[in-house]
Image (cartoon, rainbow, N blue to C red; front, side):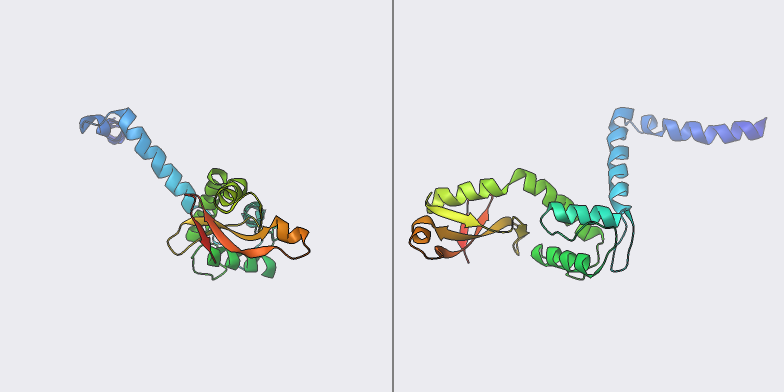
Length: 184
């Protein structure tokens, strides 16, 4: 009987510990949840050339969603590697073609930022600064500068110059969420 009692006591102590140290179960719960979220992020696989799986498929779909289309076949081939390297370079990451924690985090962040700062919003900001007679074109990729600030890169063309038979190109611009427009 003592053995059973000793086995139960540590369990009771562990459950009662938050209350014993003055922390309510409600305060303890968010910490447990945040730890689960961190643990989930850490369970993403490291993917590289030659990997084959369904996260490879998920990776390819995520890349496609953020305008780095590789095709979605579940095989981490040379095209997927090239797009991963391009994404990494565009986001000031080490462009090694290996998808580890930093690349997964950048992909997740890019998805959220694209929802908060759309291509159409960037074009409206550009037209507000440069005029409604300007047409913007680009590949729709949300990039990061050296200070990790997101921007879209657009070629700007003048509608009147196009009507006159020219390309209309007036330059390349980086348009930021805060309304900054930087000529490149």
